[in-house]
Length: 195
Ligand code: SF4
Ligand code: SF4
Image 1 (cartoon, protein in one colour):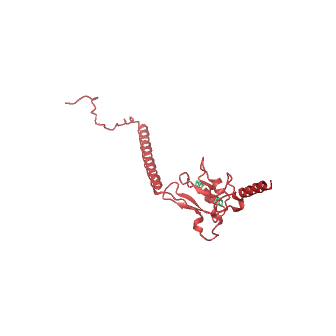
Image 2: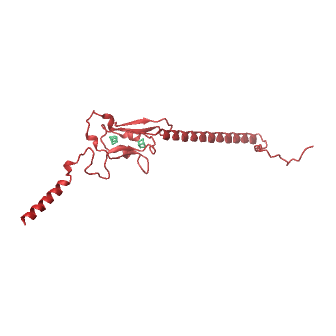
Image 3: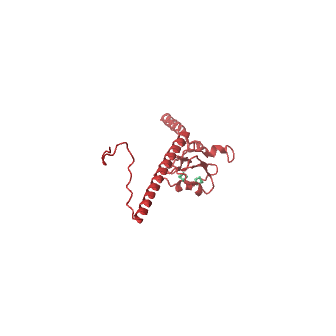
């Protein structure tokens, strides 16, 4: 009986030793608890960010720097200095993009306890790496939008000029000028053939 008790105790102790206690968890790399609204390292979605600067303006400790992009619209995206950030989450709250926020504090990074205040500070930045192909495609889209806008402006100007001309003729009592159809190569036989 005594021997069985000893064996049972030994099994219990060995099982307990195999389970990692919270004190043994290296919190630099592993979180003990990971709640749904955990505020970790920021993630920035450069494709949905509209470059409104709201996150930068609301940051109480100036942890955000706006990175400039060679685009007309969305010409800035946020980058965060985590060694200054106090993880208040205001930047995420202020971000207006929907349905998803373009800046969220959900990144799973736990090694921010290591290093020190000034050491390896460059490692404590959330940098936004935007591929050149993305920039090129946005530039193309911006170019196409510009051409479309110019064409629409020209059309509007031509319509306004025609309207003004018609009003002028009406004022002078002249017949309204017939709208000339552009010549499409088909001869006009409605007036008969001469000769
Ligand atoms: S979490 Fe707070 S302190 Fe950190 S970047 Fe956002 S607004 Fe600034
Ligand atoms: S608030 Fe959101 S949309 Fe505006 S610049 Fe920051 S991340 Fe981009």
